[in-house]
Image (cartoon, rainbow over all chains, first blue to last red; front, side, top):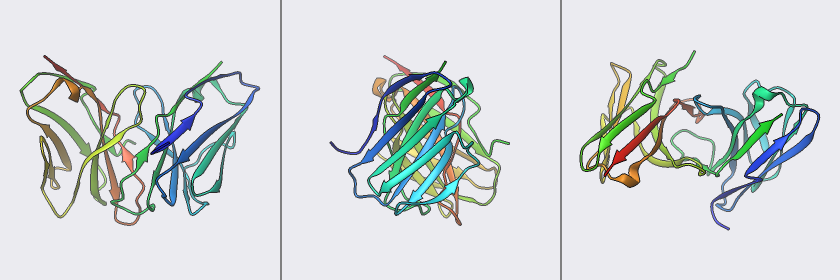
Length: 114
Length: 112
């Protein structure tokens, strides 16, 4: 595997379910990110991790819970979501979180909350 | 309030002609700008960037122009090819943070 991978690619869940999204990067990067992209809207940064430590939480509701066990893996745990949380969730990584550092994106998980 | 705006949701261009994608920003603290390209069912991929000390950066068929006084940047693709058909996002970041603020994207269609 190369680059940034995400599983599952598609997920349908009910509002009472608990599920997790997984991201793995094979690039040796130190920073990882979760983004949300809703239809016709810009990508919105959710969380930033640098060397496994969360450095940014962009006012994300607590029903989204990130976990970064090491620099290569990032999870997004989901529980009691709302239909408006349906979106494309993208993971990205970069060498570090500084300015001008290119971010590499995974293919995303298309989430539908019913 | 959206700090980075791409006001054209779509653009259609004939193969071989120039494609011009536009992006406006409101925050004068932004000083690094990037363009990403996204195909369906794939994540965005980095295309080209420019820092505020420059007004032009070129990479093959792709050129980005920055007009700081107008807070405007544009991506020129020439000649356009059908494989360029994708959604293009511009993004900006400031000197104090690498946090990227994205526009909402412009879908480019290059017709043979």
